[in-house]
Image 1 (tube, rainbow, N blue to C red):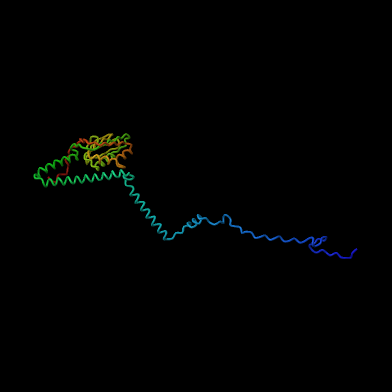
Image 2 (cartoon, rainbow, N blue to C red; image 1 turned 90 degrees about the vertical axis):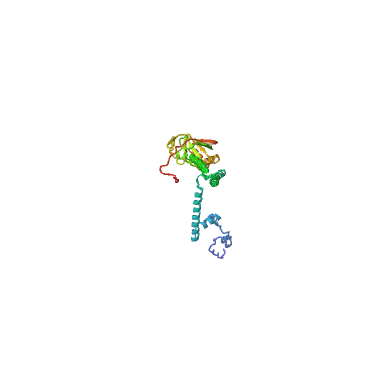
Length: 284
């Protein structure tokens, strides 16, 4: 038996194994540094739309910009009001080009009639000044003037070119003011003599009553209403057919207006000659 002493085990070693058989565990290898994590979806760079919204809201308005905006608003409002007031011109609003040309032609014709009347009066004055027998010439002109005034006053029958206007009121919606509008349009177009359903219409004529019960100068008339008008047919008919005029207004009331041109219109309804109560000729 050997007397050699067995060495005592060192701490951390098993008593029955040698130190080399149980080595200490090696430290884990250090991990290589990886890439930095990128920003998440919520942290991504803002888009162009987001930058635009961020630049516009909340608004950053300076005092100068506010003053300019107020001035521009006032200018735009004034222009809108002016355009609206200009566009609301009644019957000519939305008229076609050919209608506007026809209206201009009608105005030219009226101007020409006035020029012709002026020339006629000047010729009469010249005849009076140059006539050897001024008294006889004055008498002829007086008779002619009396005849003309008799036609206008309704005391003399008349005939000549013109139109016939017939208004059928099946719905019973035609009012007295609509017939009066037709008379006014015809007079403005140069009508020289008018009668409605056998009643002579003159300067002091009046229309009264409601639809279906209309009177002219106190005489009752019923549909269909027939107008006999002496004047230039080329002027009278277009005056009734202008956009927004008599014919279109009657059609809106479900009435039918028929215009017929003729070279022989007879206006034979007469009115009694009435002596004025107060007015007297200045020559008396």
